[in-house]
Amino acid sequence: MNRKYMFSALAIVGMAVSAEVHADAKHSGVYLGAGVGEVTNKVAGFEADGVAVKLFGGYSFNQYFALEAAYIDAGTLKDTVDGLDVSVDNDGLVVAALGKLPLTDAFSLFAKLGYTFYDQKVIARRGDLSVSEKNSGDDLLYGVGANLRLGRRLELRAEYEVVDVKDADFNLFSASAVFRF
Image (cartoon, rainbow, N blue to C red):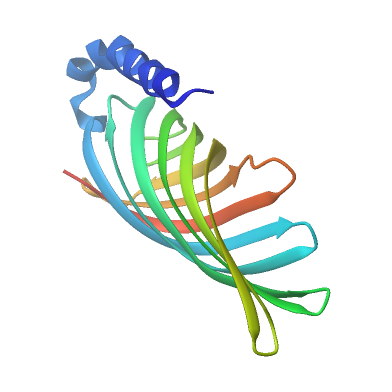
């Protein structure tokens, strides 16, 4: 999907639900969050997991809908493939829409659909020889999660996200703290 169309679609959906903002001030507004989690990456014989760090922010239009942007640093993942020591560095930006289902005033579930724009650096070593390659790409991202409100401004979030990369698996399970303004 073309980036221009993805951003246009997110903007149109945001405008369509913005009329609800005034009716739901308790659940609307700007939020920032930070989290840590486990990332797994599988592709062409390479299989590794590691620790990822995530920073994000968004705007919740009401208790049912939010738009969010995030930066994810997946760190350096390492594996040995056919006698080569391979390390992969991944990081990227995410733009997503969240559809939320409040089960109580303090607990809600959500589904996330968006797009990620990522950079990747691969280094393969055997002895003193090494080869490196840099790649960039963009792919669909989807996920599910849950929020637990601990007060007026603080929430805890657990979520599972998948980047839909062709012929590869890239998944992130994370826990985050969210601060609402």
